[in-house]
Image 1 (cartoon, helix red, strand yellow):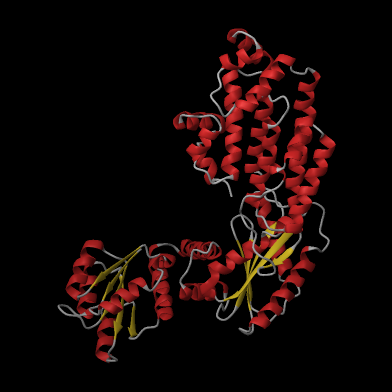
Image 2 (cartoon, one colour):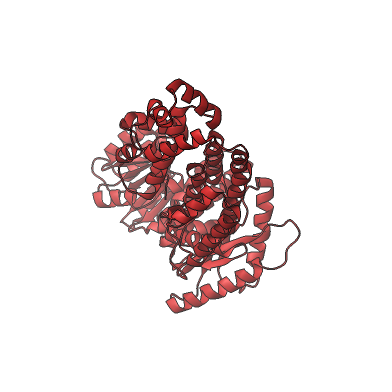
Length: 527
């Protein structure tokens, strides 16, 4: 829908155009004109459905503009703005079928309501009553989606939309709640009934006089807005604590078999113009579910927000790496348990950081195995991809995933290689490769080191290691490069040189082949 604004006062004309979020009202394009003559020319070229015009303008006044517009396109709705309380103007406006006649200065909120009313009249005239009701419902749904998505920034549009569609007075101080199921993956047929049931529970125990609104997102998340009686910060803290206790009691109440659990984050206090910030606060607060577990409620500000940064720990400890080489499953499990107990106590890292850290721990299995193989490298790659695509809500799930990966790798791949250990010759070759991978390393050089001809050595190497010599060396170098990319800020080309690639283009080519993306993209995706 198009809107044309005609006023000879530039400040008023531009103020109306730029001061309102027209897109959220369904207005796709806003045109302007500084005179009646210019306005009619623009109208004739663009044929907007809505015209907002001043009465007194040079060249052609607003009433003459109204008359001509109605001759060209009677369906166009014209709203007259006037600074003159003169009945003759009003009489002519009625005679020429003006949609409304408003006295200046017009308040923004009143103008928003007027534009919405006239827009709905335009739609009503175009369609049947049933279609019009569907339009209103879809407009309400779209408003709710944009609201919970933080896409509406105009305070007046937020206030008016909440009042019109939900009869909710959002003036004053608010708290914002985000309620999420502790497990995702439910389809729409399952998510909506679950959200409806939780919405009913969330209203339990509240003061019947208190202002409270619950909206549902497409993915089954509930967003709550709660109006506070006063703007006092101390009162807001008390209200947030009471809300936390109420929700905790509801979320931890016994439930039917198979019914999902939910957790909540509370943001605020703030006003409606800060809604996008309140929504973000509630989401940040809910992130602490990672450490507290399901059916938990968290208030923003109770603790420092979780950070997304590199975690220093087991992956940097030589004694842990030594346990990997020894394939000491029992002691490795104990160290992993102790490490995640430390992370739980610190409560400092977000999901992206934990995912990257778990991936680094799993890659150690392929890099530091006493007897590496292509199968083990593939196992580590697949497990890292599973971490990228997994939905982990608790730290316990990360710990369990890493423990299972270590147990499977050591029980399956380490054990199988150990049953038919590498020959003494190949152990000598592997040790030489690991000590010299960062230098120029050829099959001829390694063959000379172990006292064999290059062709015979290549044959033995592929037979025992399962992959050709060059691929084995490249996999080792890329694994080392990934560690450096994750744990240092060195330039990518410098890392390539440090692990044995003198040609940056070749380094990038090999990295992309083995990892499915270039090293620059790998670094961008780290915390």
